[in-house]
Length: 458
Image 1 (tube, rainbow, N blue to C red):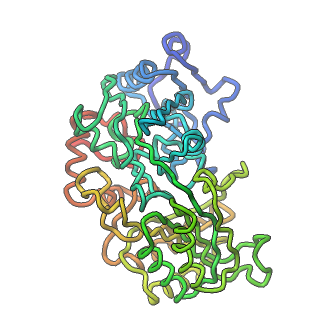
Image 2: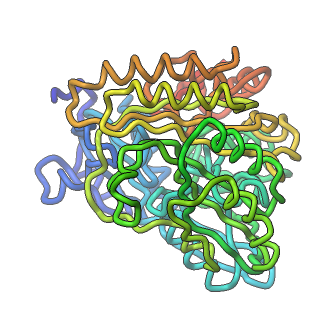
Image 3: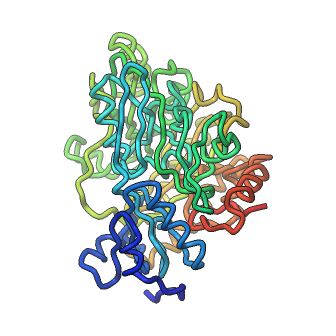
């Protein structure tokens, strides 16, 4: 891949001035350091920099601003469109910022943004506490939190951002600011859902939540219009202790599924109940009664057990779309099954996340995540074998999303692909967009932080 023309970086000077590691194109480990989660992204930065503290982060940000070099910021590198790497620019890799302090009695944790959701979850779980992150252990807490964070505690404790008490942010002018409700409240509002547009967050201070018993795991049901619609209804009516993520898909050849079921439509659901076992069994009973389960792995467990093992294999090629809907009745469920059946992808998936509960009780204007009242998040995906197949599956996904869209194009920023400014705008409906642009103008008027789903300054 050709490298975009960028100002030259004096790597030796940077090594002398920076507290941390600087990896250039000629250094061992460069190819490994420039890789991100999505395998199709193949960019060659001028340098990957791993700072050890806020001052070093500020040095890199200042260098990028003053030299006009493109700056990409990486927490875990899971961006669908490769925002954690830049062609010819600087990559600010936060992986060496991995300090974690837990205060069990105060139920507070301070975590630097080089940590992953799995690392933080394991550490706080040892104290009987939890922070509601997403559904994948290897995702960095930086990008996950900045976009909102929708996971297995969303109905009980809200989004990840709803547990954020404060943040330390390196802004475009190299300042290190502490943002909370009292100090820089505009910045604090913006970083809770507005993504990485406003600075480099080096650490978050989270409120942790006690987990008094937990039951969760996988439940697999045959997918029919009736079972899909009934599952959504049951998830909506369930107590707030229960959160669900249900994937409607052709059954893969999993060893615990009957061979005759392989390829037939199933609902593969992840359910987690944050409460005592007797209450959990009562809450889970309606789901088990929707149809004869094909597999039932619901059991008492710790919250960290909800993160499924990641086998270390390279993720498959895939395209995806995200949207919100407010109903999935039998007719919509039949549409979902019909669209999945028409796909030529290796694995087409419609993932349904029923929201509500604690997330919905927070006013929409309280944070930059403005979808508080939307009932269901839908994520559509197509997994395929070769890159040249992408246009076919992208066309299928666009039509699929339009068929479910209910006239609204609202989007969750953390699940957006490279879909253009209009879709970024859809992530911030109403006055949220204008308010974010004003905050952007105040803290990053030159748009130094633009390698993201970008909100341009007003």
